Amino acid sequence: MQNCCRLCQGRGQGGLMHQGRHFLQIPGPSPVPERVLRAMDMPVIDHRSAEFGELGRAVLEGSQQIFKTTGPVVIFPSSGTGAWEAAIVNTLSPGDKVLMVETGHFATMWRQMAGRFGIEVDFVPGDWRRGADPAVIEAKLTEDAAHAIKAVMVVHNETSTGATSRIAEIRAAIDRASHPALLMVDTISSLGSVDYRHDEWKVDVSVSCSQKGFMLPPGLGFNAISEKALAASKANRMPRSYFDWEEMLKPNAKGFFPYTPATNLLYGLREAIAMLLEEGLDNVFARHQRLAAATRAAVNHWGLEILCQEPAEYSPVLTAVLMPPGHDADQFRKVVLENYNMSLGSGLSKVAGKVFRIGHLGECNALTLLGALTGVEMGLSVAGVPHRAGGVDAAMKLLEQRPQGNASPHLKIVGT
Image (cartoon, rainbow, N blue to C red; front, side, top):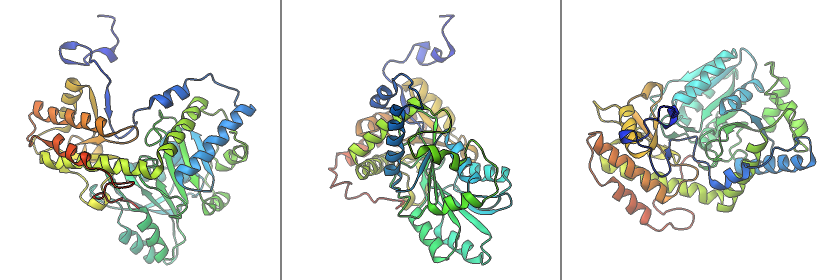
């Protein structure tokens, strides 16, 4: 045992290895389905070949269906952070002013990135318990008679808090203010899990990545781009090279890339898109809503508090749960991991140690969720966290109700 790697140590009581699969219940990266894993298990091919061109066209066109756009989707070999950067450097210039809302950790990170590029950010303070307020955005834009604000930048699903901003209402607020600002939306943890409509909501740049609703490993970043954003990219003054849309779009027209692409991830992307379309996007969204509602039923029964305070903004992707006073969320997560081989999401920055997050996205169904909630409830008992037993039963009762059409009758599709 002395030569055992560190990854194998401490993964169970008494130093024993856990049996059975690991429950990855963080809000991304999400578990990768077997179909996707098998699709990626392919030899690397010549990325200048006709065969690759077919693959490239398939994933570029398929991505348009997931974003619900007829415009171009650019795919970078990058993380979601790279896709954030691409959105900034292709549309804005140093000294430009943008409007952002403090909805949580990731909105704050996007703000910090914009600042590094010399962008002036009007950052609306928030309490990390709700999404962006369309009325506040409308008021800010109405006050901006000189149209100094060049973009409104919003995180659709704030992964750190479990709050989903209402993008359609934000679009309507921008229109009521008759403001020409670009609308840029981070869909990193929402795309493929939450109803999202790039064209219908007149979003100019949608930012996403591979390891959430697409059910892939990390490594692909996405920008869906409007004609207005493309026009901005031809006039802005921000230097860029790797993330230049123009350099990507020229070879993309034939399914190719200007530099070496992540070929095997693209194989997986093609399969993931096929899975989403086979299920039907409306059914995918309804499934996520149903699992989220069941999770909230369990949390409410336990007597714990959900971090998001606005029911219309409850996330279908994850549920962030506040720990009772005097109990540390990270210690609770450690108990769950060591006893039941399940990973829960940690609290980030302002809510570190105060919150744990239950992911219910991607390849997740009722039985998977009930297993995860069972692990949480047992963990609450072992960790001595005050709660009322029976949360799993409450979730089960909700899931036993037969869905009507694409969604359960008691579920409201939020964020649309």
